[in-house]
Amino acid sequence: MSDLSATAASNSPAGTDAIGNSLDDYLRATQSVIRLEQAQAAGTLASASTVDLSGVAEKLVQVTGTTTINNFGTVSSGISKLVRFAGILTITNSAAIVTHTGGNITTAAGDIAEVISDGAGNWRVVSYSRCIVSSAAVIAGLGYTPANKAGDAFGGSVTVTGSITASGSLFCGQNVEASGATLILAPTGSGTVLFRPSGSGSGTGQCSISSAGALVVADELTFNSQLAGYRGIPQNAQTGNYTCVLADSGKEIYHASGAGAGDTFTIPANSSVAYPIGTVLTFGNDDSNALSIAITTDTMRLAGVGTTGTRTLAQYGVATARKVTATEWRVSGVGLT
Image (cartoon, rainbow, N blue to C red; front, side, top):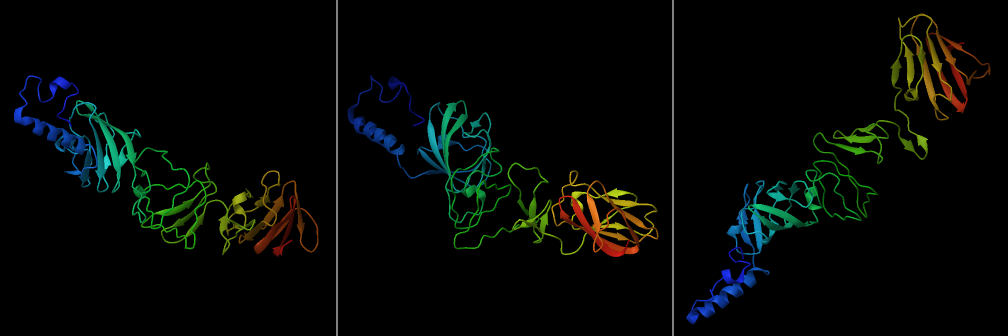
């Protein structure tokens, strides 16, 4: 096809040629060109920086290997080819190959690209068909890989009967379900399975599973509308005066030996820090100086007595404050007056 001219007079036989016995040769040549444009068995080329499509007469070209492709050679403008890939390689987006996505394409086995020559060694990818395999070893088997243009997405449902491995990020806008099977999210190597609500920041509402199998929650974890607590009591050691923060929920605010005299640990008002009802704060004092436990504008009552106001925690004393209503706390402990 690439040897033919769009100008009829430039093709063979010339108008002045004596046809003679050559008529059947010209007819057979015409028939072969028509056949090559149809479902002829693919010609084969090895992947290289330049895969010269002019060297294959067939419309369909099979490209083997994994070498990055930067050019498809030089043919007349308007010549089109179907290029089928036998494996994973990269087609570089450039002036020589303008892709349909505007970015590099990472191929998968069975993918087919339709390319059209713009002449002068320049080509254009006008369509690209992905081959979806049931046991995809790479996410390229389902669609664009992270190397492709950012923001590429698939609408509707994708069914996979094998495994999906993503070398970059794999985002699912809706539910991920396992029908009649077990859904396993398993990071490999040093990878992490990260759960984060769409649109939230990198540290907001974030939960992850490390490759060691540890579940890490950056904010809070809720079961059946109840906040999950700690297996132990994490410690927040403080010296000097300190006002509790939301992250202190379930923790011990610890006043170590030598931390200082006259220190006060304060529970903020609900209007300032809205701890959920049921929140527990633990206070420990190992300093020889007594520690004051205060509250701002809300109410803190001594358990069993009901008196309110600032409490004093002696050396080696431990006190626990529990939020019982939006603006009221109960405090009790050993060494607490």
